[in-house]
Amino acid sequence: MKKLILIDDHKMLRKGISSYITENSDWNIFAEAESIEEIPAIIKKFGDEKEDQIVAVVDIQIKGNDENTFRGFEAVRLFSKAGIPSVIFSSHDTGALIERAMSSDVGARGFVSKLSDEKMLLDAINTVAAGKTFVQPDLVSAFMEVHSLFSVLTKRELQVVKLIQDGLPNEEIAAKLEIKLSTLENYISVIYDKIGCRDRNSLLEKLK
Image (cartoon, rainbow, N blue to C red; front, side, top):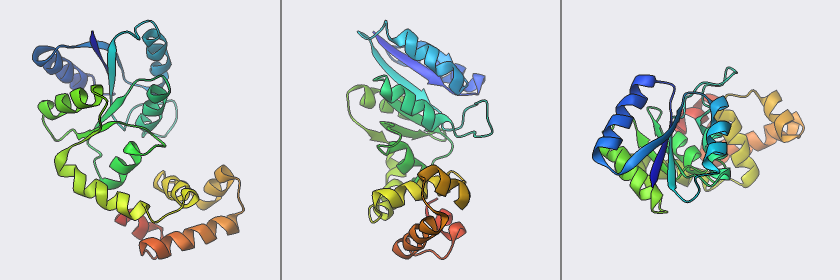
């Protein structure tokens, strides 16, 4: 049986997706949640359903018990570890966020904007269920542009960029990576040179 998990903190949107999917496909709604804290219970429930085909649809911006609203990436990681592929469905659809979502660090298998229609989402779900990846066609160029920028960076430089994208100050980034602040500043300087930026704001602007 084909079963779908819906993770979004807007109940009405979940209801709309659920109605469209069940009326226009052979997918059934397996579980719904609005916060990151509910996901472990869903994954535990999945343990008894492994003979079924299951895909998770996840918004980037979901509730958590802290101030970080971009918990969708963490949700995708949890699902990936459990063997459940995910499609990101979000109004946050910049090239940088698509690249982040589809990276090996996060592991989403598909990305669709909430500005698209439900059929696009259903196409993504079916594609991902078939073991392939799906990025909404009109978002591909923005995704590839950022992906091309990231290709010039080393693994460590990519880690730094992703933490900058998360809004962390230099002191917290250095602590998280367990390096000296001066070492981090050297990394950032090299990143600016490689991508052609003068400061943090111009870097973030280029990665939108």
